[in-house]
Amino acid sequence: MNNTMIKVDNLTYEYTNNEDKTNIALDNVSLEIEKGEFVVVLGHNGSGKSTFAKHINALLLPTKGNIYVNGMNTQDEEKLWDIRQTAGMVFQNPDNQLVATIVEEDVAFGPENQGIEPKEIRRRVDRALEIVEMTKYKEHAPHLLSGGQKQRIAIAGVLAMNPECIVFDEPTAMLDPSGRIEVMNTIKKLNKEEGKTIVHITHYMDEAVEADRIIVMEEGKVVLEGTPKEVFSQVDKMKEYGLDIPQVTELSYKLRSEGIELPLDVLTVEEMVKLI
Amino acid sequence: MLKNITIGQYFPGKTIIHKLDPRIKILITLLFIFSLFFIDSFTPYLFVVAFILTSVGLSKVPLKFILKGLKPLLIIIMITFLINAILTPGEVLYRLGPVKITIEGLRQATFMALRLIFLIVGTSLLTLTTSPISLTDGIEKLLNPFKRIGLPAHELAMMMTIALRFIPTLLEETDKIMKAQMARGADFESGNIMNRAKSLVPLLVPLFISAFRRADELAMAMEARCYRGGDNRTRMKELSLEIRDYLALGISFVLLGIIILFRYFI
Image 1 (cartoon, rainbow over the protein chains, first blue to last red):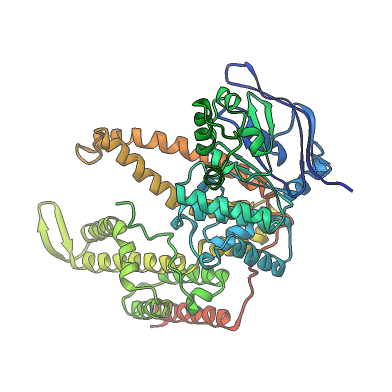
Image 2: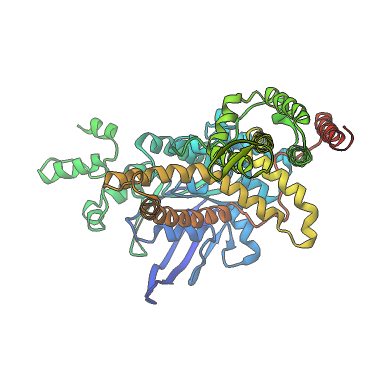
């Protein structure tokens, strides 16, 4: 009956900075994310996208408005741990979210906090490591792994808590290109094979191409929303918000302004090749 | 330069020493330290050496690796040796101005230096063969009875785990900041102690700032993973005592017994 994973209702978040000035990080945001959806939130620094992510996990509470995770209001303190269990979160810096000195112990950290039976934890840890393809590193020390591997461990740590939804707060921002590919493949796998709802926050356009839906944020507001094709075809608007568009779309845009008839919603090289 | 600290470093393995229950290993180490301070002659050291060598042999940690851990503490050992050699009264062996080395002094100095070395080797064997997480687990369990008098056992253990987790990360970072400062002309290696201490300021300030930022982010990540202190927490690996644990503990008591025997009866 209920297909909504996250429901954001007139969410406003204000904070006071050092000089006692009130800043508005999120300004009356309303949106819904369905179960099983792969949503990418785009926006450049200071657009409020990270603040938004932290609201889903109840790490931040709204100043005004409400946000519901699987029907639970994040302001309801009794539901706090249920919410955090339902919506897991992966952060930007892979180093600063690993707690333990052995990979499998770190993956076990979440379920241990939930008070789950040791045998069940073991099962979940093995399964989570299998999904992120890090089983053979389970007894390694995390600081000896590459950035992409560390981030996959962090993902496994969240997975072991059996969340329905995973929020990724710029998980690829500190990784090298190969690490980014590893992490993106894992994220896509979680969505396609494990059926997890994904909220992926990023400023890399090419990571947004395969999303079900893109939400563009600017100064705490949702300014654009739609499928990748709908969003990226609004080239002028995207540029106005200081965002890039995928290279192929850019190319098609330039060719069009030279008078060559091409659709604007070309996103991948393959599509482009077919068109030409 | 920062890479050769072995104290607190884990040497992975699957030997019987590695498999011992961490609680037992901590107890044995405490017993071992206790025994060392009971010794007042050289003969019992033979048993200590035998005990250490057997443990090291069983643990398959290369002896070289353990001896490397002694290096940073060499100065302390030398100072102990010198002070003991000079300050013990007795038959003078060698005199240089007001400083005189006595036979008793040399004996005492060797004795103390050996005690220190055994102490370090014994305790580093504990950290080398016990993963930090099971070590903290062991400490937590051992301290549990003191919870009733207000000792925050779980919090202490968690702090230790995190400290151990971040030692390599912060070392790496120190290295990076140092190189960055050196690239801009900073000099960490020359000058007297005062100058050197001063040159550390531009290293420590960014290091501390980044450590605090890390702490902030880690706290958030832990909360996001439902961390709410030690209550109702379960563990993936539960500790259980087996025959080998009782056996190891027994052997350590035998060592203590022998040493006490030497002290009071021989």
